[in-house]
Length: 324
Ligand SMILES: [Zn+2]
Image 1 (cartoon, rainbow, N blue to C red):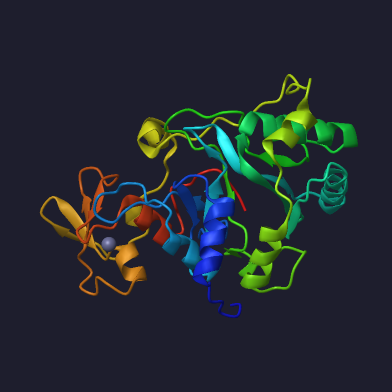
Image 2: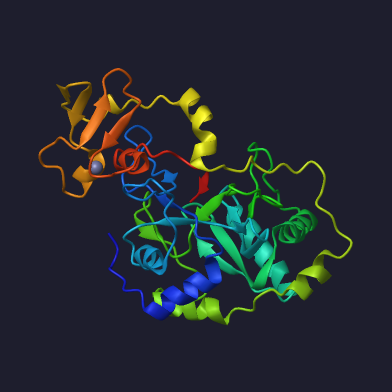
């Protein structure tokens, strides 16, 4: 893989301040899906309780040092505000459109940072204080429309995607996550840097710290008298996993027994090596995972690995919508 990077505690703190607006996050699966080869994103949970894991300084350190790759949500549902706006473009001529946007944002004295991605790039606008998602979206939509840059709406056709993807989200909703800047893309097995600075964490963070941050007063001025154009559809916001259970059951084709190798019958259960334990080098006895014979959709690791961890370890994470 890439050179090991050490993330200085100050770099971690700066990253949290600039990019982290809520503690819910997603994580990219370390293992590719066996058929598609893609590294899907999922919402990590706590071993034992299964509660959603919350993003901490330690999470950011691991992300920056390349041990894990996290996705960040734009909107904090308690305020409907975001700390940044990201424009994702990954189609043919995407870079041309991003450079055009970057140039015209510069005319407004907004100073966005251009991050490379696998195809195309991400343009990040950092905000002086958290600003209303809806107003940020009006600004970028209006600018894109004036420049003739296509905005992706319903999933058909090329265009930029604007994060936040929603004007507002409800309690227990997440919106869509985007790969946290400076993380290793698992599929590409490499880190994507910002163009504006040397390729070290310290130089990149110093560059981001030094950028002009858009203020509320500026945003108000840019969108004065403007509305969100009609007919712009946001994707259905994601709900917490409990809200999604019925839908998941309906479309689930995942069968744990096809993935655990040898399983032996013990009472009412099959018993096998837990894939999440195995990934960490544990469960050498091969008996941590119990699968209900009567209904193999129900399985449990006695060491406390959650369903999310087990699915991710198999390259079949319980997926969430995510832009990498
Ligand atoms: Zn386990």
